[in-house]
Every structure is written in structure tokens, then in C-alpha cells.
Length: 299
Image: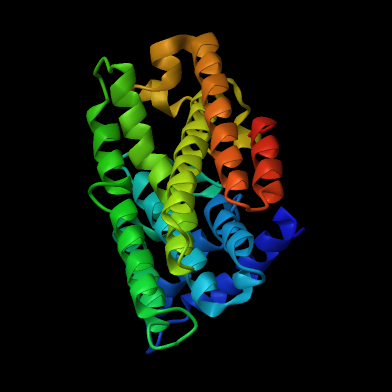
């Protein structure tokens, strides 16, 4: 079985190639895009995209269309982080252990670098359209799914709800909706998107959507807990930001103990989604190991 580090090495090697757009771009813009895209991080979304591809089809993760989708998801994620750190939003100065993009390149260039990464993501998805590895209909479904996860009914919508949650007493359902859109949808984008690309069955697509949803929720509840208890040096970003902005989180609503209990419920739902995938005859060992590693996450 391919290990997480193998997928991570593969996507790290592919991202600089994926960033090379046809035609010449201003060097400062490329520098700003590269600075954030290659700043490291866990690469959760592209790693899971490649892993699900191999789960569905042997050695699919090495195919250009799959790699382009994985890179596109990571570019969209990185653009969202650049914009999230801007003074008009979270006004943060630390990301992945480094100065945030606008601190290094200025606000205007950071906005444009984020815009360029988002646009490049869809360039990548489109450049493989003429290849015949997978039917055009499947490529279009993957493209459409990625778009919905990234846009107003996905991650951007979640960012809006995040801003509106400041200085407001939120209900649990509102927090779940916020975090589903802001975090889970972009995890779903890669794993369901690649399943669409490979022509997976409706049952498999539904189980993967569930897996992405609950993985995103688990990741976010952990983030909310770590924002309170983790050491800033280990976390790689500023801690206590949610409290500073009076944002509604699982911790502010439920307390640390309540958030931990909610997290335990989500683990059970994650395990059920994996069981459903196994019942469809799929080998889920990688995803199971990944979930186990996430359970042990401390930063």
C-alpha cells in the first residue's frame, strides 16, 4: 500500500510544474504564488485525492488528469488561506510557520496571487480536456463538482458565514453549516471530484461525500480545540484568533469537553462511511490509517 508520505512527495514534486502557466507572467506574481503554494503544510486534500484515485483504479494517481485535479484542489486551498489571512478578514501574520503572504508581498499582491492561484486551478482542469484517458462527461462532472465546492455554496460561502459569526451567539446547527462549507467541502472536492473523473458508482460517490463531510468536521473540531490548547510554534499559525475575533466555534459553543464529545460522535460517522466503502468492495486501508493518524493529531 502506498504511504501518505509517498503521495505527499509526489504532489510536492508536481506542484511547481502545475504552476507553470502558458505565456509569461510577472515575476513578482509568480514569486508570491510560489511562496504560499510551496510553503509546506499537510497537503491533506491532494493526498486524499491521489489515495482515492488509487483505491478506485490501480495506479490512477500517476495519471496527468488526476494529478492536475489534486494540484487544482491544493491551489484553491492555498488561495483561500492567502485571502483568509488578509487584514480585511482574519488579519493574521503567521501561516504554516512563515510570515503570511500580504506581510511579505503587500495586500494588493497577496489578493492577486490568490486570484491567480484560483484561476490557474481551473486552467489545470481544462488543459486535459482533449486527452482521452477518461470520457469528457466524467471530466466535466469533476470540474463542476470542484467549482461547487469552491464557490458560493461551498468554501466561499463558508467564509462569509465565518465573518458573520463574529460577535454573534451561534447555534450548533449554524456552526456545523459554517464548518461544512468552509472546511469539509474542499476536502470533498478532491475525493468526490476524482471519483467523478474515474466514473465511480452513485453508492461510492455518496459514501465518499459522507467520508469527506465527516473528515472535514473532525478536522475543524480539532482545529477549534487546538486554537485554544496548542502551542503556536507547533501549530504553525497564530493561536487564540477565534477568541480574539469573537467567532463562533465548537469550543466557544460547547466548551472543550463538549467539543471533544462531539468529535467522538464524528469519528463514529467516519468509521461508518469507511464500512460502506468496504461493502462496495473497495480497499480502504489507506483511508483507515489516515483517519487513525488524524485522531492522534496535536498540531
